[in-house]
Every structure is written in structure tokens, then in C-alpha cells.
Amino acid sequence: MIPAIVVFIYLAVVLYIGIFAFRKATGKERAEDYFLANRSLGPFVFLLSLFGTNMTAFAILGSSGHAFNNGVVTFGLMATSSALVIPLTIFLCGTRIWALGKKHGFMTPVQIFRDRWECGHIGTVIFFVQAALLVPYIIIGVMGGGTTLHVISGGLVPFWFGGAIVALVVMSYVFFGGMRGTAWVNTFQTILFLVFGAIAVVVIGAGMGGFKSAVAALASSPATAPLLTRERISPYYFFSYTFIPLSAIAFPHIAIFCLTARKMAQFKKTVIFYPICIMAIWLPCVFLGVMANRVQDVPAIRAKVEARRVLATQGRAMPPEQRDILREQAAGDDTLLLLLQRFAPLWLAGLLGAGIMAAVMASDSQILALSTMFTEDIFAFYGGKRRFGEAVQVQTGRIFVILLTLFAYVVALQAPESIFELAIQYAFSGYAALSPLIIAALFWKGSTKWGALAATVWTAAAVVAVAVFQATVPAPAPGVTTVCATIGGVEALARTPGGTAVFGFMPVVPMVVGSALLMFVVSLATRKPQAATIEKYFARGA
Amino acid sequence: MKRLLLTLVVIALYVSHQDVWNWRKVYPMAFGFVPIGLFYHACFVVACALVMWMLVTFAWPSHLEEEVEGRETKKEDAR
Image 1 (tube, helix red, strand yellow):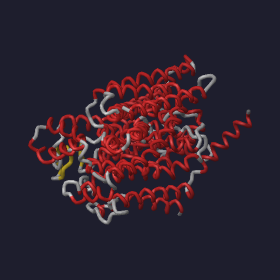
Image 2: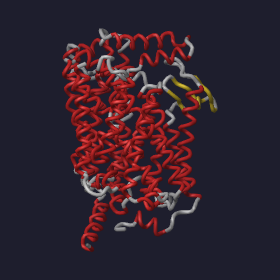
Image 3: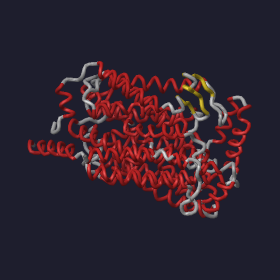
Image 4: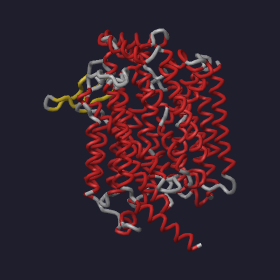
């Protein structure tokens, strides 16, 4: 129970930071102050909080869980592709989004799209698709919080209660502190995780009797040796994954965060150090996830390994429902926490748990972003701000924060899928497919609102199609694919144990390519915005 | 020319991410416990940071900064 108490103290500190930020923002309530911290974040807070915003339950618990079952490939698959693509998109697009925000007062991506392409309701369609894709991400945060508290307390805090506590704390500091509170909390959380993550590696490594012997043992066993290679993932799948980080700049919370920097120079350190921060967090998580396969004296880990073995050896003869049960049992989302329980002294496990909790709670930015989008893209756009004033707009944003958190919590209690799968299948692929919108808006004079609409509708349809396909065709046993369509003898569509394959690639590849093509072709065929609008965005010195 | 070179560097970095030659290799192990594929990708991250430094140093979109600062100065003057 001691670790759980330490985590509760940590949650109280986080809550205090949020309320302290609320006190800092005295005077008349202004939307720009609540939603964008008055565009005044300094370089240190900007780097750490932008990074912290991207480090969620998915990054911490999902990555170690994925590595537990798939091996070191997880690092190249998710972390290093992000280390290249995310800072590159922040460099290319983030700086331009910041400049547009400073020049024209934009607070959300949809505001940029509406102005850039001279559209109203198409912007509303984009808002709804963005919002629908962001909600699963928020749910992941609540699920991660519930899992963390449940495991750290040794099962004393039930999942539903842990999730409720986390949801309540996040909701409170977002409600009171807005962007300033969220950025400060994220900065604090990122520092905490970076420090305690390093300690976790040392403590767990020492507890296992050193990594050299553990790795040697894994390499010597035919069952675990593939975990030290990339054998469990195909090169097509590995390549496909480089499309996923395109989602970062299309995520509204990241785009909105780009608007909070005081000066553009603050992007410099963020762009350069982002890859290093990724390595500092992901490398320990992935490595420890793989090492967990050696920890056979923890019953929960042993049960996972056994479930994986049964699935691999007898899965083909089982009904789909039984395979799903085994997949749930083999899922490794709580692996990192189990390692802490096993190897760290109680007080340290608490501190490390707080560090994990820090990353898990990154859903605050998504909640605030959705609130910003709702109040700016819907409430203000359809006349609410004009009729009721800016103070009411901010209050509306706060009420939205409460309703959204409650919704995410209720869904998190029902959601059966593992954190990792839920994140990838819906939010990340969908947002990656929306990235052509922001790229076209910023870099292509010839892009039009109809091209943007076509790309958005395609994205929504593709996400729904993948979800329906995966719900209809049960996941096969490991090592098997269910081919559903062939073209000229080539597997065009297949259900794999981990999801869906289109010509061997993850769905994100055709989704992004299709979205970019539609943006291009439909824009060529439709009327461009007025010359004055294009001039506003592309003339130097405009 | 500078832009072209930097674009080529970024493309080369992207291509080098697909290190199929390390696919089934465990050895040699860096520091005695880091499999070669994992070590390669740790080095790749360092290369990413270096390339980002090059982009920031040699291709920084300073015109955007100047435009915003110019506007803000005008606003302050008007006040």
C-alpha cells in the first residue's frame, strides 16, 4: 500500500500545480489566456511539456507491453521512426503554425483551415472527425491510470477506482489551470519520468543480477531468442510504422501546443532534443519489457508467458473467442509495473510508480485541446462568443472538460482492448491520414476546401472500415493470416493476429496515400481560394 | 544547393531506418548486453538529433520570425 500512498501524494502535488496556475491567471477571463497560456511559454517549459504531451500511457505501458511480446523491434518500430518524423514535422509545420497563430490570432487547426480555404461547414466536418479520433486517446489515459494504481497498490485499489481518481485529478487541474496548468504539470511529469525512468533501469537491472546474464539467457533459449531480433515483425509492417508519427502534427493538441511558444526560437531546442528525449524514455521501457520475459518468479508474468505459449502452439485449433481471452491474458501493459513491484523497495516503487503515472496522465492536453476546439470551432464560430462574451466561452470550455472526462471514464470501464491496440487502430492511423490537410494548407497554394473535405471523409470512412473489418473477421492464431481478398494472386486484404494488412502493409499506409491523393486530385479539379487569401499565406512579409 | 543537400540527408536518414540487414541478428552485442539491432537504432536516434541540429542551423525559417516580429513592432508603435 506504501507505493499507492506515494502515488496519491504525487497526485496531490499535481493538483496543487494546476490550482497554482489558476491563481497566476488573475483578472478578466480571456480565451487566449486559458486555452493558450497567453502564447507565453518559455523554451524549457515548451520543450518538456510538448514532449510530455506526446508521452502517454501508450508510450510507457503500451511500449513495454508490446516489447514484452514482440521484442526489441518495438524500439525501431515506434520510437526511432518518431525520433525522425516528429521533430521534422515540428520543424516544418509547427513553426509555420506558430507564425500564423501570432499573425492572425488562430487558436485551433480548424480556424486555420477555415481561413486558408475560405470554408465554414467543411471546417465543422473536420472538427467532428478530429474530435472522434481524439476521444480514444483520452480513454487510453484513464485506462492507463486505472491499471497503474491497481497494480501499484497490489490490487487494493480496483481499476474503476484508480481510473476515477486519475480522471478526477486531470479534470481538476485542466479545469482550473487551463493551458498554463497543463504545461506546468507536463513539465513536472516529464522531469519526474526521465529521472525515475533511469533509476528504474538501474534498480531492476541490479535486481535481475545484471542485464548481461539476463540477455544471455534470453538469447540461449529458442523460445525467447527472437525477442532480441525483429523476427516477429515483417519488414512491410516495420516500414508501415514510419507513417504513424505523421499523426503527431495532425493531432490538435500538438498543433495547438505549437501556438503557445513565446518566440519561434523556442522551437530550436525542441526540434534538436526531441529525439534524445524519445530515446531516454522509450529505450528503458522497451528494454525492460523484453527483460521481463526472464522474470519467471512473478506469477502474473509467468501466466502471461504461458498464455502466449498456448496461443502460439494451440491457437490454430481454438475458437476465436478463446484466442481473444488468451490474448488478453498475454497482454503486457502492466509488465513495467510488475517489474517495479518485484525488484524495487516499497518506497522507491511508489516514486517510480508516480513517474509512470506522470506519463500515463498526459491525456490532459487532449482534454484541453478538445475543449479549445469545441469552444473556438463550434461555440465561437456559430455565434456563442458574440452573444455571450468571452468569459462565458471560457466557462463553456470548462464545462466541456468535465463532460468529456466523465465520458472517457465511463467508456474506459467498458473498453476490452489493450491500451496499445486501441491507440494504434483508431487515433494514430486516423490522424496520420489527416496529416495531408495541414501539409497542403501550409505548403500548397493549389489546395482547396473540397480536397480537404475529400481527404477528411476518406479518413473517417477508412477508420470505420478497418474497425468494422476487424470486428467482423476474428483475429487468427499467431503466425497465421486470414486472406479476405486477392488481386492477381496477391493478398490484397488480410486479417492478421495484430490487425489488418493491405498488400502486406498496415492500413495506415493506404490511408495516408489515399488521403494525399484525394487532396491532390480533388484540389486540381476544384476552384482555388481567392488570390488575396493565397497571398496572405504564401507571400513573404504578408 | 544547401536545401537540396539537407533534403538528401533527411531522405538518407529515412532510408537508413529500414535496416533489413540487422533483421535476424542478435550479435555482436554492444556493451555485452544490447543486441546489435537495438544498438543500431539507438545510434539512429543520435543521428536524428544531429540532422535536426543541421536543419535548425542551416535551414531555419527566419523569415517567419521576422514577419511576426515586424508586425509586433508595428503594433507596439501604433500604441
